[in-house]
Image (cartoon, rainbow, N blue to C red; front, side, top):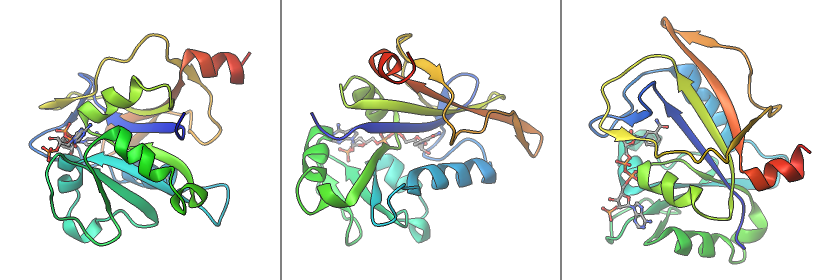
Amino acid sequence: MGPRLNLIAAVCENMGIGFKGELPWKLKSEMAYFSKMTKGTKDPNKKNAVIMGRKTWESIPKKFRPLPARINVVLSTNDIEVDEGVLLCSSLEGAIEQLQQPPLNSTIETVWVIGGSSLYKASMDLPECHRLYLTHIKAMYECDTFFPTISPSFKVINDPDVPQEILEENGVQYHYKCKITEDDFFIEVL
Ligand SMILES: NC(=O)c1ccc[n+]([C@@H]2O[C@H](COP(=O)([O-])OP(=O)(O)OC[C@H]3O[C@@H](n4cnc5c(N)ncnc54)[C@H](OP(=O)(O)O)[C@@H]3O)[C@@H](O)[C@H]2O)c1
């Protein structure tokens, strides 16, 4: 089995995640949470990896990519141009396999799947899927990209890194949740 995968996404009330290749909202503190969660390691000598689809990669403004202090992995079936140091893979399984090869395997702490839609679905179907970090935005935005259906077997847990309170920015309320698979729930909680 490969490394555990954590998924992270922000969704609005219709489970939308994107519109016209961008995020439908502008929430600076939610972006800061994404950054903190995907960068954070317990071991200061290690880094995390972020796996994303080609459209999510393109949605990041050029000056902000690759995402700093993380190993960026982009999935595409085409030989697209990516910055030096960015891993380009033609499948999710291929990406996981590459991350398990030395020297990467010993330097990576957590592998984060950061979207988009099909990648979230494929990752949730894998046994490596570990945690699902969702930001629920309590508003409705026009979206053309959506988070896939989440199996009811995912259970909400209290993760100490996840704030519990309802937050607000520019009049928009949102809250964070962490869900784990039923198997992990029995191992970790019971
Ligand atoms: N709210 C959030 O948390 C969040 C997070 C991420 C993204 N977004 C938004 O979502 C939108 C982008 O997401 P999206 O779902 O449209 O696209 P995406 O998943 O980012 O990219 C889709 C592309 O990625 C490649 N790909 C995906 N899975 C692959 C696989 N298993 N193997 C090989 N290649 C694979 C393919 O590229 P090729 O066509 O090049 O082969 C595919 O066309 C944007 O609007 C973005 O802002 C929101």
